[in-house]
Image (cartoon, rainbow, N blue to C red; front, side):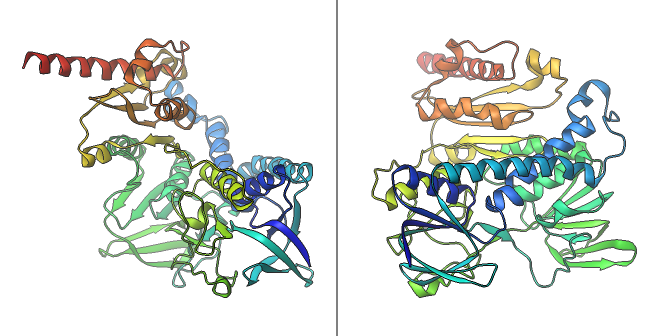
Length: 471
């Protein structure tokens, strides 16, 4: 039985980063994955496919040019499901080649098959061929990711009623769609299909969506969606989903309202893929959604040499944070020095338009009783915004009145997930509003919005400070 310093179950962002990190430290690493190719959910059904579809839709529809040429402007008049897949296949092939080369270059071993624990240090692998292999692990990282939550009473068929994995293989672009669930995945796909001129209705039992996003940004985003005729139905869940005649679907809400559409995307949460790991054999237990509890600093489970990282441990469930979790866990697992996870990290939502956030929201700051002031900049106020034909977009920064330090930055609009990194750097370096006022930004750029928002906040702070002195 072969022995490894680190055995990683799952080759998604957390798993592959952990394995490569252990190998770079001179340790032996093995990655076990049930998929036919490396990459996990992130590469095959999650992050990369959804973002590739988004970019394809924006390019083929001419979405970014409609500010100049009107809402009827199109680059390609008839867009098909095959058009969406063509770019996806090329992108996935490239991603897989890169990951395979990373493993080869760093001498990370791979095995394809289903893995489960035999005991705390022994893992059994059932290969596709039926062969059974056992390996010994000094340390283990569980990074199996998640799969869509599929209630038994929902009649999934992959075309009329589908989950977010099945959506990638649709045969035709629907003229109408009901999206059940206003989480990140549901909202991203709802807005992508809205850009394709699909009539979209979003159903959410809660009274709002994306509660971790600053309310002002959410409100701006929701207003843009409603302006595009995306219907947001909050406060009522989907009690019943049915397939009916003529290839349509019917959804009955908890308030009695009945909705009909050509398709239903059920995106009401995800389930940790931990049910086949035999966790009980090592004294571990997953919650009802298959997630594993870990130490937030080391990512150790209740069994010290067994770690978990990525979506399987829950929020924030981002590819970016999963990579960092995997790297930290691997260093800790093999006895190398490991820094704590960074205090502030960016959260990106690849909807149409994008949203991105880093640091505290205005609501969180209010709850903590911190005296603060905000600075706002609308993208249409920038010369680059005019050049690009951008009519919407908002950058918001929040500063401490006492120290002038940046507390949070929140963006909705074109390029939000790129622009956020400027704010992230200032946050982690404990920068103040003076940084934005005193430094030069390229002109014309959307990043100039930081300068505008900084000046806005600085002027407001100066007025408040002058008023306090007079009092």
